[in-house]
Amino acid sequence: MMRLSIAVLIICFGCADRPTAWPMRTWAQLCDNYFAGVENFTKVSPVLWRSSQPTAEGFRDLKATGVKTVESLREGKDDLPHLQGTKLSYVRIPTRTWNPEEAHWFCS
Image 1 (cartoon, one colour):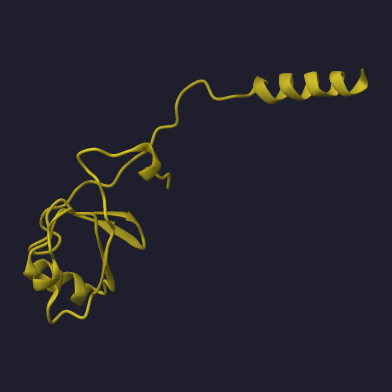
Image 2 (cartoon, rainbow, N blue to C red):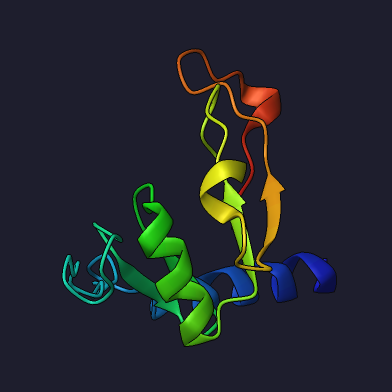
């Protein structure tokens, strides 16, 4: 009986101060002129940047800025010709963008 009473108290007090509204997130503004040849650019975190498909000039500008690795989620596109001469590491992550299945989802 004592355990039940303690459990009820924990539940009641644990729920007493729950938030009344969803947390608001602020996202960085997209920037299309930060790098030449890199559109839809934004910094997700200090070490993770994202953009749409860079041009060959965009890959060179990213390398000159200190980017070391490019991760591609594009399906059926080959970025290697654009990366020539940049010494960027390239990681292709296969995706099924037209028919994602729950087994392929992940949480960050």
